[in-house]
Image (cartoon, rainbow, N blue to C red; front, side):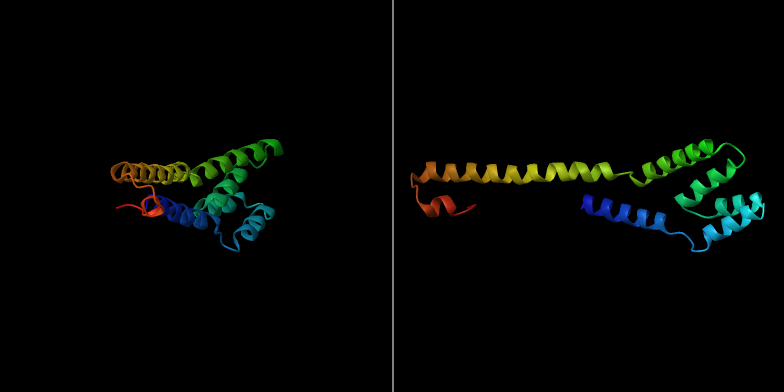
Length: 133
């Protein structure tokens, strides 16, 4: 149940993060080419999502060397990816533990089978393949 909850929650979060208004980037480009940096910054600040936050960081750095702009946007991108990967560790833990529970069930079944054989001293196919009694 926990795995399903985390999966659905992360799926919805990542799906929301990937959505961006279709006219966002053209509007940003238009503002920047018309030398209206404050309007571009305002648009990026008022738009929700990781892409808008990365663009905002790049707009903040306009006028600085391209390497500085790239690195700052890359750092914001890494932070956004980190936010989107939150709670995925829970899924990996559950994926690691699930086979162990299956193996534990197999071992418990084998112990029960050997116990039944020791009680009845009957080593027939029905005793071995009878399942849990």
